[in-house]
Length: 66
Image (cartoon, rainbow, N blue to C red; front, side, top):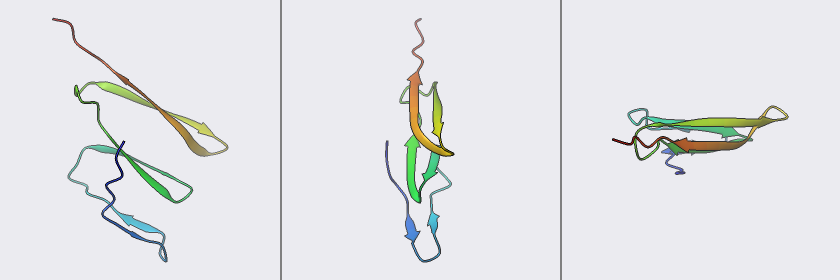
């Protein structure tokens, strides 16, 4: 998990992110969390919601056997 937000403006409640990167951005209670993709390039992320907020993210990664 990385937190590569470029700029946060707390007065406007906005954040600037790098849209050239393939990543998943989760905003919960004003906190921005950026999740990079699986290192293998194949996988799945599932978000667990509670009371209308993202509580957890479950990451699974697929490994191809040749």
